[in-house]
Amino acid sequence: MLDLGAEMLFSTPYLKKQLVCPETMDQCFSVEDAGLYYRFLDTLSSIRAPAQRVQAALNGVAIARFYKPLMPQSWFFEPQADYHQPQLGELIALDIQTELLTMMVVETSPSATVCMSLSGDQFLANSKQLPTFAAIKVMNDRIISLEASYREEEIRKVG
Image (cartoon, rainbow, N blue to C red; front, side, top):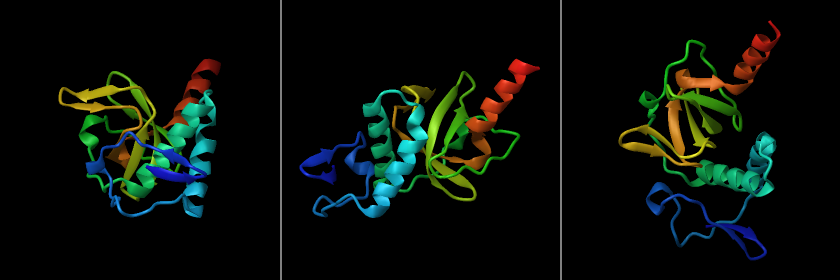
């Protein structure tokens, strides 16, 4: 639960074992959390439903602040020829051979990125399902810049 003040609590879809938040510790929405929330909200402006946009932004903050450290699980995704160093809050894609999954970057490092799924529930393999708002860490060589992908699509339309 994330205390948003004025009797507003937000519950994430994450299991207790996935989070590093002692139950006895009171958590309030900090100035840093607010900055991150608005950064994510701006990134998600293309989502038409305001409630979904808010839910995704709050889940992004919850992952960034409380999610246990993850080991990369890059083997589910296709390597990319163009290396992309993502920015915090950026919308990216990951290729699972059958389609591209839309993700939002919630934590970055020079070699790996923690992202949150914005796509519907997806099976990555027979044993692994990636639900909406799930967090996964991948090596940066798997990331597709949606901006670059969009530009390529526009160029194909013209030429």
